[in-house]
Length: 71
Image 1 (cartoon, helix red, strand yellow):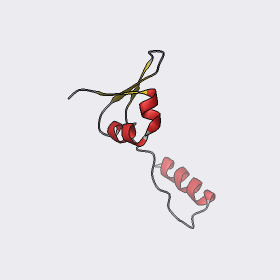
Image 2 (cartoon, rainbow, N blue to C red; image 1 turned 180 degrees about the vertical axis):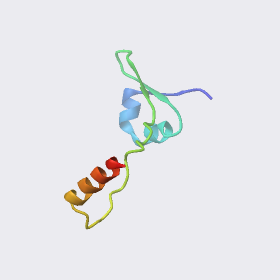
Image 3 (tube, helix red, strand yellow; image 1 turned 60 degrees about the vertical axis):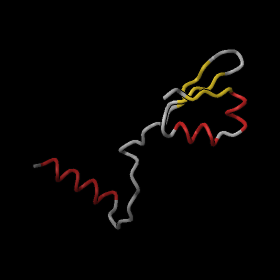
Image 4 (cartoon, rainbow, N blue to C red; image 1 turned 30 degrees about the vertical axis):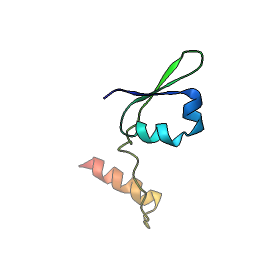
């Protein structure tokens, strides 16, 4: 499979096209001055998790952390 290449003007005309391709494979975007940019999907961070609703206070959480460190 060959890498998809776009000029900067092609990429700007319909940005959704190069972005949808970059979800699956690396693409290149070339500016008029010859500089080439590589576009790849950045993996989602494992620390990017949804929050939860709780009645715990900051004090409750700090106490639980402190207690867990005593063991």
